[in-house]
Structure formats: C-alpha cells, structure tokens
Length: 148
Image 1 (cartoon, rainbow, N blue to C red):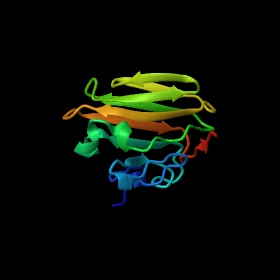
Image 2 (cartoon, rainbow, N blue to C red):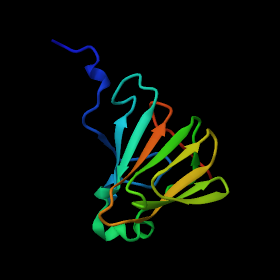
Image 3 (tube, rainbow, N blue to C red):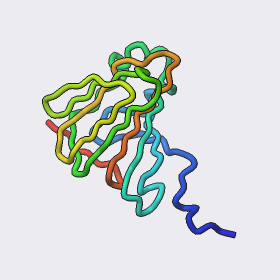
Image 4 (tube, helix red, strand yellow):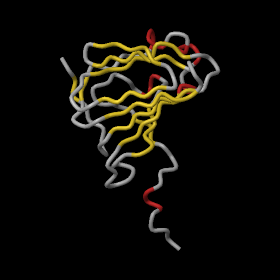
C-alpha cells in the first residue's frame, strides 16, 4: 500500500556542491548536505542545509580559516537562520552581519533578516568534538546575491 505522505520524507541528504555567492565546494572535503529543499520535496517552502564538522579532514580542523574558502558577503530576499549545535565549543564561527563581527560557538542561533549583508567563516574545530551548523532558509530554493 502506497503511503500518501512518503514524498514528504527525505532519508538521504543531497550534497550541495555549488552554493550561490559562496566559494565553498564539496570537492574541498566539506560539503553542505541538503536535508530539505524544493528540489527534494516539491512545494517545500524552506531549504535546510547541514554542515557536519566531523566530516572536516583532520589536517584542516586546526585552522579551517587557512584552508577553506571564505564565502563572499551576500544578501537574501528572505530570512535565514543558522543554528550552531553540538558540543559546547565544538567549533568557532566568525559571523559578519553588515559592519558587525561576532565570534560564536555552539550553542548559538543567528537570525538574519532579509537584505542584511553577511558572511560566515569557520575559525577552528575542536578535534573529537561533535558540531553541526544548520542553515534554515525560508524559501524552497537557496538564492543569494553577492555584495560588491
């Protein structure tokens, strides 16, 4: 018997290889896994991406800022929320919101209203710690505009 809501469940995340207005590529060993998007669930009104810091290669964990490309400053037309979850202090994220800079570690939440220029950069990852960066984007398709 076919279940009528089975199409609303994603059991296998999709690696997000090219993120608009970002320089992050899965080939560099640190993908964002899409857990929910309009491409996975037609009609979905949000996009959820997860970055698992355990997946970061050991040689990069000590200084990810020296190895990973930094996303361009960008904006969105819809709200975006980042959840920093995991072991306390599992990683440090440098968050730029317009002209303000914050250094954050789990547990923390960053809400970004539409139009606010922003970018985030991993500063360091504690070996052996469990940490996830969850991105909740209030549109089914992730879209960004680079700020020059």
